[in-house]
Length: 108
Image 1: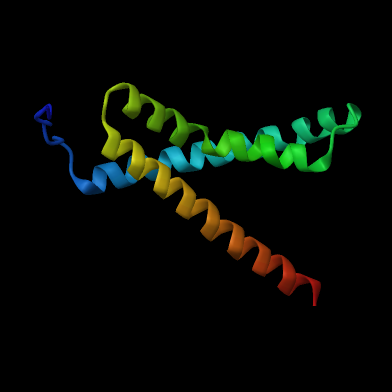
Image 2: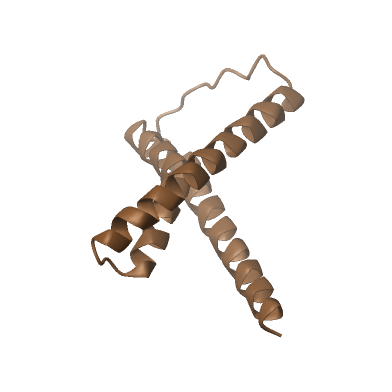
């Protein structure tokens, strides 16, 4: 049995949403950058593997999307959860490939 719900359209324009998306993106990146150095120093003092620092930073960056997807699943919004999942995967793969390519170009 399918459950039909009506979704109220947003009262704000696409420009408004774009501005807030950029503001939140900058905020997440800023918080991650501010926490990366102290986190790396802490993990180095604990003799943790270097890759673990990268894992924790990636976890910080991806947590808003993960929490959004979890909220969507709990609200039975499967399509929204899948969109968040695939968007996150696509962004991660795209940035990883570009980052590795830039790193290799810097080695030459």
